[in-house]
Every structure is written in C-alpha cells, then in structure tokens.
Length: 337
Image 1 (tube, rainbow, N blue to C red):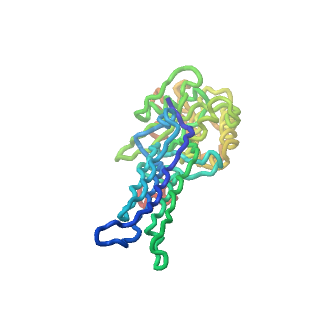
Image 2: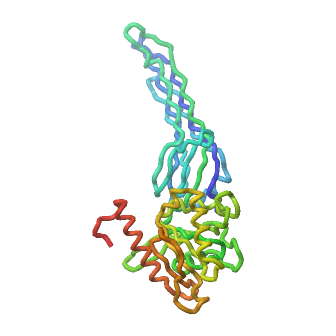
Image 3: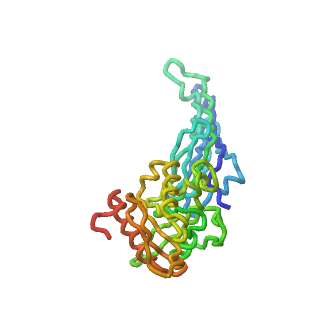
C-alpha cells in the first residue's frame, strides 16, 4: 500500500526536576547544598531512511513520546537525560505543523535529520542557588515540559524525469522497458494507482531516476480522478515528459490539457523543462513525429516501448538535458559529461 500523507502526534520528554539536598558527612557538619540538576527530556527527531518508500508505518502508530529526564540527586548528581525518539521517513518527506501550517523542514537524503520537538530543560538543584550570603538554599526548579505537536508528513518522490500523461498513455509500459521496475500494466484506465520509480542504467555507470505518475485527467488540479492526489510527486522532478499516445484523437488538445493541469496546480512546476513523447509508434508502422505547437518544449520524440523503437535516442536526450541542469545548479564540474 502506498501511503504518502499522514498525521502523527509527537510529545518530547519533560525535563527532570532539580533536587534539594545537603551534604551529610561525618567531619562536615556544615557541608552545604549538593542537590543536582534534572536531566533533559528526550527530543523527537525525524531522520531520512533510504530503505523506506512510503509512510505506511505511521498508519499503525500515530503517537510518539520521548522519555522524560530523571530528577537530580544528592552529591551534585545530575539526572540522566531522556532518550530521543527517532522517526524514520523516506527521502522526499516534507514535515509541517498541522495546527499552524508552518513548514518545519524536509528530508532529502539518507541520514539527514532534524529535531521537530525539543525536550524540556532539566530544572536546577539547590546547589545552583548557593551564594556567599545564601549558603543553605532550599530552592529548586521543576523540569520544563517537552514540546507537543501534531505533525503532517507528506512524501514527494524525488526523481529526475516525471512521466505525465492521461490514463493508458503508455507510462508504465515505458518505465518497465527502460528500467527494472515492474508496475502493473493492463488495457484499462487507472491501472496505475500509485507512483512507481525506476532507475535507468546507461553505459559507463550513468543512471537517472524516472517516476511514473498515475494518469492525469481534465480537472485533476481540482481533485478529479487521481491527479490531485499524486500531482505532488512531480514537484521534485527535474524534467517533465508529457506522454501522448499516437492514436489520440487530438494531439494538440491533449498536450494543451496536460500543460494546463500542471499550470493550474503549480506555476512553478509548469516552468520546469519539459519534452513531448509520442507513444505507441508501433501502431503506425513507420517513424513519424506529429507536428504540434509546443514552443516551450526542449524536444519531441516518437517511441514504441513495446517495439523498443526510439528508446535509446530518448534516453540520450534526457541524459543530455539532465547534465545541463546539474551543471547549471553547480552539482557537476563544467567538464563532466
């Protein structure tokens, strides 16, 4: 089951209270205060885990609480700090405070972590309050309470290429041919009910990640079909590939509709580099690229995933464009190819 949006309640640990104590030794009748401080409460930490692909685990448990700090003790002993609680999430997870809507952060890579709820500070023991004029203090501080929050975790898949198209446009078939992914493929609409990721392997150990997004229909940005539920997963892609079957009734209308749905969902997303890929070329039996008005596209290709036609050219074009984007972002040296 693919789960990409969950809410969880987290409670950081309360700090331990300080201690009121005085030294009691045989030859030190006026030993003075020696009450130690309380320990700090445990934090709630979110950490990236590349072994995870969904937020399914959080549907079984929706409340996480860190350990409280121990109270201070005599002989100036500080209480033990509470253990932190680590919530593992897949890379690409955005964390928000559900009550305020404030975005707390995001996890983009394995091992990345940050604190979403801080544990309470431990209280001071009476030794802290001793002064030259106040040598036998009985004051102490209670520990502070840990932060309590309701978090919204939203997973947005990270991919280089996002395949965007209407149901039965051939997205899953293409992904299964160019990668080791094995999405469900059938001859009826909405076969793909969850996004699929596949790693495309080129020569010289060159690889990139392709995401197959469930079919987008007209009105997807308003919640129709499955589009609104999964449009978030193309937000992190570098390149969008608008896929149009060669047997479509109106190529231009289908392209314009896909562009409009993406634009209505997010103007920033619509500004990403994109190309047009005509699929099911084997139905024509000849090499043909339809003429459509797509001035913003960096290229147009016709392919047949079933017939293995035009795939090498398409993958090479994607790789070339990805290199340009990575160099522009400073992720690669200028001479790297």
